[in-house]
Image (cartoon, rainbow, N blue to C red):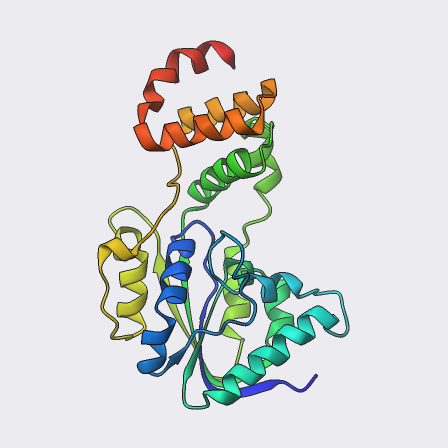
Length: 263
C-alpha cells in the first residue's frame, strides 16, 4: 500500500508497565483540547467499546512481521488513519501503544508511515520490575497458575531493549528519541502524564486527578495469594471480589500467614 505521508509524528511505544494506560486514557479524553493545540490523537486503531486503555493497540497487534502485505483488517485501519490525517493536515499526529514496543513490528510499521519528522517518547523500566508487574497482570487478568520462577524463566529472552531502541532510531531519516528512565525518584515515575507533556512540549494543563489508575499493581504477597486462588480453582466471581477487596482495603498484609503456609 502507499505509505501515509505527513509532517510530524509523536510515537509513544511504552515500554510496558511505565504508566502507559493512564497516559493513553488521558490523551483519549483530552483529544478535543489536543486538537485545539495542533495535535491529532486519532481514533483509528482504538477499541472504543473495550474497558482497556484507549491506545492504538489494534493497529500494532494487526501488524504481522512475516506477511508480505498488510491484512485487510490492518489495511482498513491504516486507510482510516490516512483519512483522519488528511482531514487535519496541519496537526502533529500522536500514536500510543506499548504493542509498538516490538522490533519486528516496527520494522514493518515504518513502511506504512512516512512522517517528515518523528519524535519517539519511550520510557524504560528495570527489567526485573517489568517482569514482576507483568506477572501480576497475568495472574489477575489471565488467571495463570504458574509460580513466579517459571514465568520469569519464560520471560528472560523477551525484553530486548537495545535491539528495539536501534529500530526506533531508524524509524525515519529524521527521528529524535526522548528516552526516559522509569525508576524510583524520576519525574516519569512520579507522573507519567505530566512528564510526557513536559518533554514533548505540549502545553496542555494537567491535574493529578486526570491520572486514572483503575487497579494499581499489588505487592508480591497479595499477587501470590491471588495466584494461589487460581491454583485452587475459585470461581471468577469469587476471585474478582477478593481482587477488588485487596485493592480497596489494602489489607493484603493480613494474608501473609496464609501465603507462608500455602506455597
